[in-house]
Length: 165
Image 1: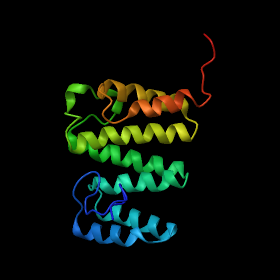
Image 2 (image 1 turned 180 degrees about the horizontal axis):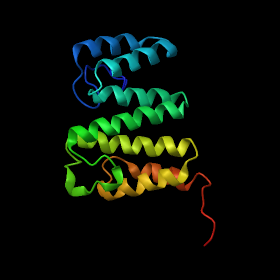
Image 3 (image 1 turned 30 degrees about the vertical axis):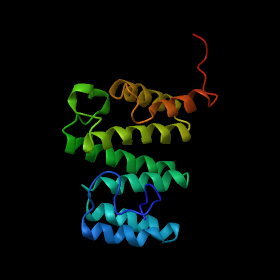
């Protein structure tokens, strides 16, 4: 079963998974949360360049409302995907011409992970940081292929109205 979609599949979001990591992920599927967490972080240590592990980590921690751990995993995933895609280390410096963000690969994973980080910030009441990421998503994904506008709507509806200026 795919931990991303819940459907029967051997595919993982973010790319290929080395055999030793696949074994850890397979074991994590039916493990209790504490063991799952250990297995996922072990997979990250075993293969720090493997993007799907970061996705699974930030989804796992966000689902359990462990936002500091989810943020840590998302930031590591963003850094790793950014390096693989040849993007600037600071996401604020990335421009749309730096990569094909619509094509499957590290650049798209990087952008998707920015969206995840915006969600994590929203849920952990870091609204201004979430707004900054949403603005960058709109700039890099003007066709809304990743659904950043959903987080923007959640942000607007979360009683985070700014005081009048």
